[in-house]
Length: 209
Length: 209
Image (cartoon, rainbow over all chains, first blue to last red; front, side):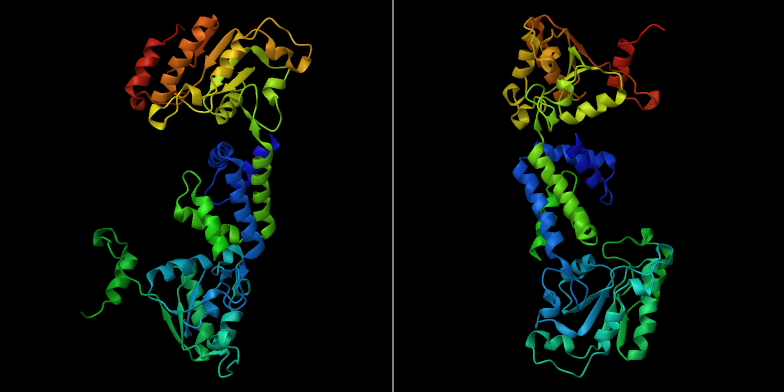
């Protein structure tokens, strides 16, 4: 049954989906009306055909520049640097951030052969350097405004930390303010179960109330 | 980003895949080359366009009759009744069965509104009844041979049991031998952790060595 095997193999390539889960998904799909299976196929094709990286910030988008870079309502003096486009959603959901983004497309990882050249770093430095010159094009005017702060929001992993340190060194000579997300105990967390490193960072970062 | 949201929604409709996993899969796919995404799309379309139920046994197949029903090397006097087409794979992997199959397409479940009419039962009774007349068409000759045994291989769940009992009552008047899969402790299982019902069935089904 070649088309069934085909589909199972393709599904098994997805992360977190093993051979058994792929089979289960295939048989689930086989029980659905063909129209429903085709809707998923079309959604995949739509993404394959129309989604690409924003030429300014690296966010995944159907338009170029992306909705953030093109919006006159975002604060162009702030750039939040994230590892992946998916991280933007997490920050947007807080409703607390009105600046722009920059997607690195990963984090430094010598073991996986990912060095600075594999990440979207040069474009970030260019964005921070490009000032003064104000465009006549109102949609892009804000994007060429001066960047005053870069928030480094890489993941709190060893590689995320190394990436943050690397970015800090690259950005420092440009005279821009560089900040990082605060570390501490998560809301709803239980002191007893917070790991020592996080607790130490929560202590050293304590604030007056 | 409508196409990205589209894909996430479609993926989230799959069983066992929640909103978060769907998002993670979407972003994984977005990082793959478009050609790879399209391969998955094409696999889905292939299945939607070409897979349907075998008109004899209900197995999902690209051809009609399916590979089992059409094979002269399968023993047409044996029919193994399973709930879903996916169950055939499990039985084939044992390498111990050479008969034909019959796929019910589910199990009796009054709570879900699934009665005998929703299952592929009438066709099973017809297959068992249809004897004597031997076709000239060699590919189908075996399929019209006399069925001597029906193995009921529904799942060992409450609904699977009810379905088995129902099938037994329907088949009994046809004078065919009706068997069920043996119950007992699974190979590699630990007596201490086997549930009481299974252990009781293993005891009552004990065999001389």
